[in-house]
Length: 259
Ligand code: NI
Image 1 (cartoon, rainbow, N blue to C red):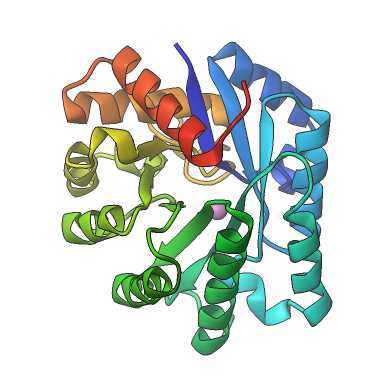
Image 2 (tube, protein in one colour):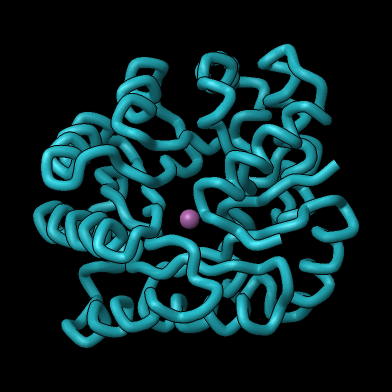
């Protein structure tokens, strides 16, 4: 059984002491590919380097909305340059966040559009972070759809409702679920996951954050994606094997991962 962990903050200091072991444990658990996600220009540079050093690790480059406030013009130029490097399979993470107010919302919107347009220009998918702003995200995505036609990207660690998921799928996007979906209180999230078309669902850890059950409260790592996948498979009435095969095929298609 193979899985792809589509969203990992592999450059975070939580992994500094044992990064190689974390990657080895993922591979041993059947996680054949990991998408390491950049959040700043420096972080994007780190994940590109990790993709070059570790087989099965791929990179996404971008500036996460909460960090856009600190970004200088040359940081964005660096992202544009890094986007063409080997091993880069996506642009992001980008998106919008109304929960934290570090970055003025208009600045977040400007960077979200820049990331989407860069992704379209390079023929890469983009990775969307959404927190407490479903309507704003949908408006931005619909405007992007006007500019570019069908979109290619993923709604990461999705916590929206079924209507928002359906609207995103219609625009061309994939929907990815993280460990939170395994929590007892997340029945609604599992119901949303159960209704995603088979060819659009993805799974991720969002490591090192929010471990799935039974590791809740501990540092998260890519090997734990197995538990989230098993939980989602059950919610969808599928075997873990069938769910793994389908989501792995979806991830390989979206990110065009080499084997
Ligand atoms: Ni993230």
